[in-house]
Image (cartoon, rainbow, N blue to C red; front, side, top):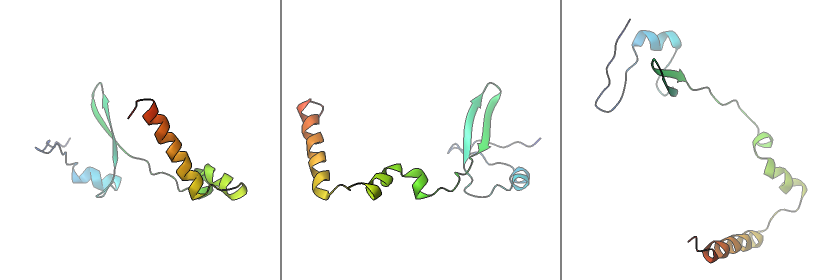
Length: 90
């Protein structure tokens, strides 16, 4: 069993043997979970590669339907600003 310390900056250094056995290099991100027994570190899973079509469903409309003009966008923003100011929110 190996030990480590918490630095004054709240950092913990994982022993080299463990980093090497897991192939964890600089920049690996971890999910930190508090458990009844202590703290659990898990490497964060990488997000699988996706295409624009998979993640930007709203673009589908712009391709098939009539896109919004800059004037349409400005009018919509102006309406929202007036609505929010009128409700006393801002």
